[in-house]
Every structure is written in C-alpha cells, then in structure tokens.
Amino acid sequence: MSTAFVARSLDEVRFWSRIMKEHSLFLRLGFRCEDTQLINEANQFYSVFEAIENRANTFDKNTDPQVIQRFNVEVHTAVSHIWAFKRKILGLILQCQLPGANNFPLLVDHTSREAFYFRNRLEQLNAGKLDPLPDAIINENVFFLRIMADHAKFIGHLLDPSERKLVDQAREFSEDFDKLLFQARDLDSMRPQSQTPPLLDQFLDQNRVSVKSLRDFKKTASDLIAACRIKSIIHPLLADHVYREAERFLHIIDMFESALTGQPMPSMSFE
Ligand SMILES: [Fe+2]
Ligand SMILES: [Fe+2]
Image 1 (cartoon, rainbow, N blue to C red):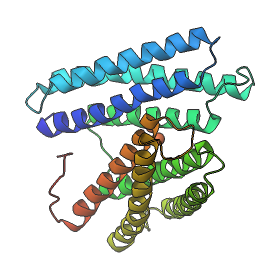
Image 2 (image 1 turned 45 degrees about the horizontal axis):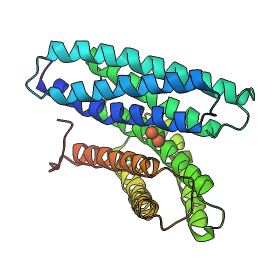
Image 3 (image 1 turned 180 degrees about the horizontal axis):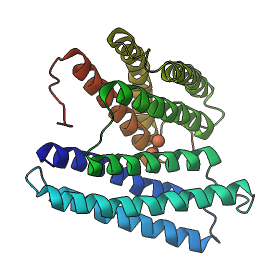
C-alpha cells in the first residue's frame, strides 16, 4: 500500500462516482410518473454517490492508505447495489413491465457494465493486483470500445430523426467502433501470442484515431445541444457524460502508450 495506491484509487473513485451519480439521474428521467418507488430508489443512489464524490474530494495523496482501503470497500458496496438496481430495471423493461418508460435496454445494460467495471477496479486496487500491461491493454480496449460503440448508437437514436446528417454521422461511428471491437476481440483470442509490443502499439494507435474523432463529435454535439441548436431528446448532461468517458478512454490509451514505449507522459495522473 503506497501513495500510488492512494492516487490511483482517488482518481478512479472521483471519476466513476460522478458517473454513477449521473446514471441515477438519467435512469430517473426515463421512468414514468407512476414509478414512484423506482424514482425514489434512483434519487437515493444519486445522494449516495454524491456523498461518495464529496468525500473522495476531501482526501488527497497523503491520506493514510488504510483509510482509502476502507473507503474503497464502502464504495464497492454502493456500486454493487447500483449494479443490482440497474439489472433489476433491465429485467423489468425486458419483461415489458414498464411500458412507455424511456430508458433503452442497451443503455441500462451499458450503465450496469460501467458499474461492474468500477467494482472490479476497486477489487483489483484493494487486492493490489492490477492486470499486467499486455493484458490491461487488451482488456481495457475491449471494454471501452464497446462503450464507445454503444454511445454512438445512443446518440443516433436520441437525436431527432430530422437531424439526418448527424444521425448518419452517429451511424458511421457506430459501425467504425463495432469493427474496432471485433478486431480487439480477435487480438484477445490470439493471446498471449498477439501481445507483442509492435502489435499492441499499432492497436493503440488505430483505436486512438477513432476515439479522438468520436470525442470531437461528442464535444460538438454537446455544445450544439447546450446552445439549443439541434433537435434531440438528449439531456445536455448526458452529452457531456459520454464526452467525458471518451476523454477517459483517450487518457488510458495515452497512458498505455507511454508505458509501452517507456516515454514519460506529462499528464499522467494514475501514478
Ligand atoms: Fe456512463
Ligand atoms: Fe457510457
């Protein structure tokens, strides 16, 4: 247990607790007025993750690692609960128990995958067992490429159908990321033989190009939505949320790149 453990834990908890808090809001917005119980549950999760986020901001890299380890356990419990809540909602939607509600099943599944990822990261941190670099590169890319492909699909479906040009662009991103995801799964199944530095480096370079352009597309969409210049049912906070997740993926790619090539990275915050 060290300052690297503290810094890394705080970085993950600060980023993902805000994400979990926002998921609670998005889920709540998609429920029907009569779903008061589900609305209350979503509001409670919002408060829980807001409190976690605030506490994470009171700690810094000099906080006792044991305090952070206990904090991670508490956060882990909260994340397990929101994961179960999301899976319960998915079940209700898929059994047609919430007719007329506005959360896509894939979006609910997506947010549950993000919770699962966060929970797994907390377990790895507390166990002191992060994946070795070649495994981390493939695992993180398989996870995030699917997340990016989903985002493109959500944007395409939540834009007004009359925004034909933007809907087309979103569909192109969706297809691009589906292909990248298949490539990542191919590399995954070819493990460990596929984990050579040149192949991993090329994999990161190729993914970075697409993530950058999706990140820019999300930024533009987010600005246009905030300025009320395009027609959609996308909440401005959802547009910013998916933009931040792309930024995070880019940061992770850059971190891997520098670890792979031994080049120092100026803004490396995971150390
Ligand atoms: Fe998210
Ligand atoms: Fe997401």
